[in-house]
Amino acid sequence: MKLDSKKLKGQWFEYKFKEEAIKVFVRPFSAFVLDITPGESATDLKQDTVVRIIDHCVSDWDNVFDENGKKLECTKENKLAVCESLPDFLSFLMDKSQLLREEIMIKEPELKNSLKSQDGGQLQKESSSPVTTAKKQ
Image 1 (cartoon, rainbow, N blue to C red):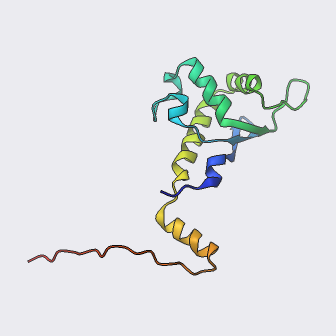
Image 2: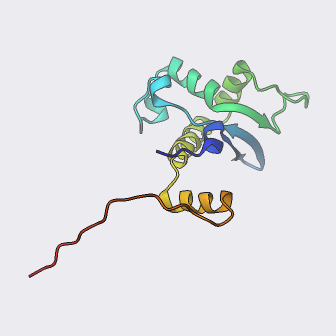
Image 3: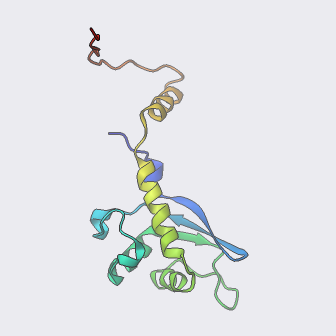
C-alpha cells in the first residue's frame, strides 16, 4: 500500500461565504481516532465529536478577523466560533477532509509516474506472476 505523504499533512482550501472567502488548511480526519462512522453526516454527530473534528481538521487559516479587524488566531475556541457563525462550514470541513482521506491512497498509474520522475525516467521492473487468460471454446 502506497500513501501520498503530502495529503496526510493537509491542504489549503477556500471557503466562500457571500462575497468573502477564507483560506483554511484542512487535515484529513481519521474515523478511528475521532470515533465516527464514515459517511456519517455532520447533523448526526455528537457535540464532543464535532468539536474534535473541527479542532483536528482546521490547522491554520487566513483572512479571518475579529470585529475590530484584528487577525484571529487559529485556536480551538476561535475555530468553534467561526463554525457557529458560518452556516455550512462544518459540512465544508468534513467534505474536504474526506476528500483528502480518499486522495491519500495513490492510484497505480500515478505511482508509476511518480516513480519515473524520481528515477530519472527509468522504472525498475517488479517481478510479477504471469496472467493466464482462458480461451472460449
